[in-house]
Image (cartoon, rainbow, N blue to C red; front, side):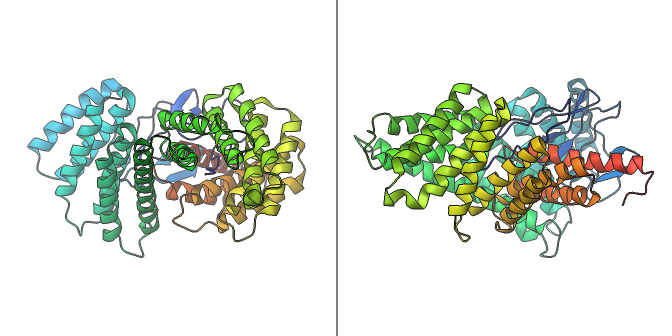
Length: 489
């Protein structure tokens, strides 16, 4: 249970909002306004420099055209050039929604497209007011639109994905397993209707795979809880597994109560277990890792201090035990990550030195065919990129990119961790461009971040961070293009 940090921040830019990891929204500041809320598959843009918001319909991503220093997004409705503007301030939505409802009932033409737009408007209002009825209305509108859309219509797969995203978003908030089951079935339908050579086929497959993983996590958690409830004195391994599974679900959905339950179960396992117990190192490691995750989200210094103490103890207590020899690299990686996040938040060069030392040892001990190797490479790559930002030694950035590239290459398409590794690689290339000015670094950053965006599920807690990094890279290219008067490729 390693769950890599996606929030690879890019230092040195004043005025940028801080990225938060797993469930917190990353906010980009553009001329003092908040830009780009991600609404379950639709990109909505708040007013920036006086421009009205545009909503991309049917799940198609608006393409950023960079030129003259401005980002212009073209909205597509079912592949046609028709454009719909949906203002995202509450007052405007209050007038748009009844207008669209009346239009749908009185005008038979393009009723399916109008229903999709109405669903977008309900979702936009839900994002601002958090009224469950608006999400219910959005889902109902999407369902009606899909019912009117024949299977051979080019927009049918993207409309199904839009509905699946909305159901996934509702599941994330309500925990209703029926929404998760329906979303999975709908994504499968979208995959079946998408031609094998279509550019969105892989993205749809990745979404389906992630939803299946969420179902597996919920099923595993249900079985674990059932076993605990049926036992007078639950087995130690059972309690640890339950805590770890809650942590995995938190890292997928970002629900704070899951993290609280994870820590509660792991404390229940650790507190009464004596130091000479064979499972004590596992208790220490699992609790320490969960506390590190909570520190990343809540910022309580005591959590990270306790995390580091527990993780150090797990290494000490496991020393000399053959049972734990295969897990030593995992314990070292966990300690390195905790020290790295402490350095990010509170500084202290000794924390960075200690983090890199542990992460390097973890990579050395991890076989090339080990499933955790991409995670360990990812964390070491991030740490070396941070040291480059501090000391400006080119070798650090070179090694960082090599490790992050290897982590990406070792993670196949369809694996939920691939977009995380691609995001880290994109950030490293972007730092290289910012410090060294290489256009090739910038293009590689954009390519990696765009792929990460395409592969990551929209309800993933770290989606907003990937979008933030992607947008920053595109802004950098826009700036270079403007400075060079169009000579930049």
